[in-house]
View 1 (cartoon, rainbow, N blue to C red):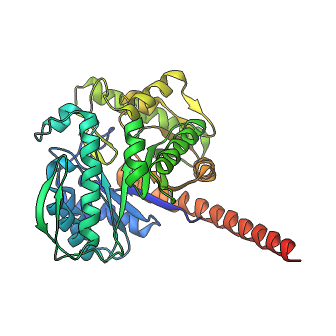
View 2 (view 1 turned 180 degrees about the horizontal axis):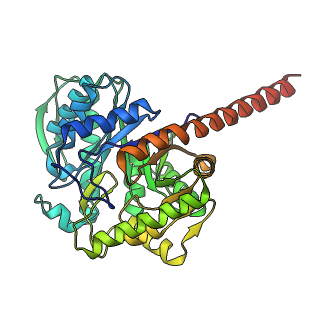
View 3 (view 1 turned 45 degrees about the vertical axis):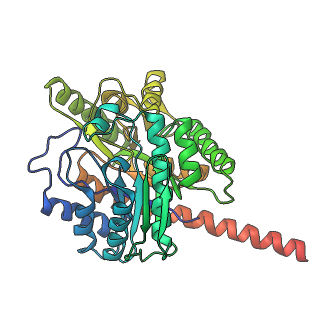
Amino acid sequence: MPVEFLGIAATNNGSETTPRSGAAFDKEYTLRLARAHEDHGWDRVLFAYGSGSADPAPAAAYIASRLDRLQILLAHRPNVSYPTFAAKTFATLDQISDGRLTVHFITGGNDHEQGREGDTLTKDERYTRTREYIRIVKKIWTTHESFDHEGEHYRFHDFVSDVFPVQQPRPNVSFGGSSPAAYAAGGAEADIYCLWGEPLAKTAEQIENVKAAAKAAGRTDLPRIQVAFRPIIAPTEELAWEKAHRTVGAIKARKERGEAITKRHNGQAQPQAATPQNVGSQRLIAIAEAGERYDRALWTPTAAATGGAGNSNALVGTPETVAQALLDYYDLGVDILSARGYDLLDDAVDFGRYVIPIVREEVAKRDAERAARGTQALAAVNG
């Protein structure tokens, strides 16, 4: 199966290791970072969402209108707009991008962050709302006749949109989370299910949970699986590990200075909290407490230093080591690999130059071998 790479479409140069040097929305930097991804083999970039952050939808439209190939993954929280409005926004962005949009729906794992924009629902209520919201958006994208909706969270009458996506029948829907409620919602509605980088055995368990939820929802197809990491690469293993320890040192130094560190998890940018409410972050903390190194290259101190701040487990080593680690996840059934360094621009370029080509070449070999085995098996049956 083909493999795809997802990077980050940050609107400024700040990260866990370095405070931003300019405004929250640095137009020139946003374009420069996106262009670096497009020029170095990445397939798409994520525009994250945060209560006080730059609005990702117009930022995504800005990039889509200036780049020709890079695909857009737009994070969206249902509490910030009515689904009729959101569906038109997404369809318009799909038009601007000539069919390069995927929408990542965020239920929200932090009550305080949700409350900043007036969302007072409980987490279980938020999951119910998200499922209703996604279904409405899908219907608006694909229905050319007016309809009414009377649901638990949304009610409207005689609505029909006059703008439709380029992609037919609709853009893909992305979803993430590690709780039973998340598996149930995403298993039912998502085309792509997003996980954070965990040890291989735990990732395999999560994939099975997603598959089981999809089947329980009556689906005959299964969501594609995406897994996210923080690669730390260097020309030698020794240099890579030195870089890894410097990275953790920089994260801790910022925390000790009392600087506000923004985290992006599940496409959501928000201030780092001492005790995470979401199950995904709790899992990362537990994994880090159980050990620092797993499998070929997974390293947990970056997650520990940020308090399980979403996509925060690292893959450390040479480009060859990190590529082979990614291929281990590909062999589990992961075909979208999300990666983001700590120096957003330079790391995107280095990963694109030195890691992506190795992974693509090895995946092509695997696909060719699989096809050859299929041909031989068919010949044996017919012969």
